[in-house]
View (cartoon, rainbow, N blue to C red):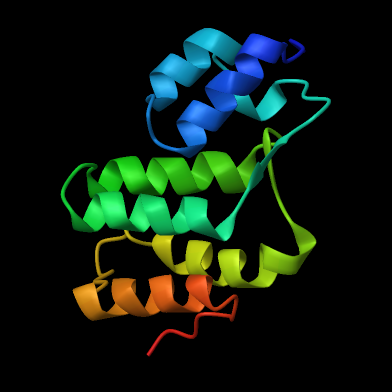
Length: 127
């Protein structure tokens, strides 16, 4: 396992903010993000998830990029959620993670409701 350095923690922040791609993060951390050793994981905030949704809504990132981001921040040891925010964040990530499935359709209204849930730190309940 490769250990995360101070410069790499900056890369985690940049990836969290979607300012660098997954491949750029892999160049900094290592190809296998699921087995990178990380003493201090980057804490994802509700505002980070709101930012990702907004970037998708505005067309700045693709659906595939959003789903990939969700999978990296949720399923690697590189990122954690603050206990107070975790329920709200996970309730949204659970839905976003399914966006690449064939029958998955998430409307603009649902995306807006996710942002509202995150902003108010409540759990998002799909319609």
